[in-house]
Amino acid sequence: MNYQFVRTQNNGSAMGIAYAAYYSRLNIKNFDDAINDSQLTPCLQKILDDLKKTSASPGNMITNFTNDPWNSTRFNWTVKSGRIKGVQSTTVQTLASYNLATGVITTFDSDAWPNATDLSWARTMLHESIHAYLVVYYNVNESSWKATYPEMLKDW
Image (tube, rainbow, N blue to C red):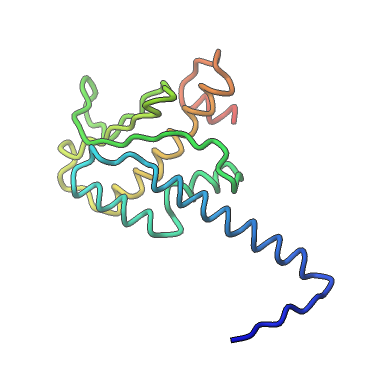
């Protein structure tokens, strides 16, 4: 099929918008693909994989939260299954420290909530993606900042 390029006043801006949208989606996909989920249980891994295939993926959630379509933080996020010690009735724990090599680590305790629905876990994963972003933001941009999540969110 032959397509003819028709030059109009708007072609340049339309092409620029298409270019930006393509690379924004590519950055979101690259972020989602780079999430280290090798330590998640198969059930939680499937939920995360299904989320990554939607427009509500963790990368998209962070992009919408930050209004940064280029996902410039590009932080490492490790998600794993495990017990959360010392805290009762907790589903998840995102550590407030960031290491460039290991990234932010979020632990999901599926044993504590055996009857939780897939939707509940998906919502929790998206919620924790924002916590992980805030950890990186404040450790990289505000390295002297030592605050709780509510203080971080209020400052944000």
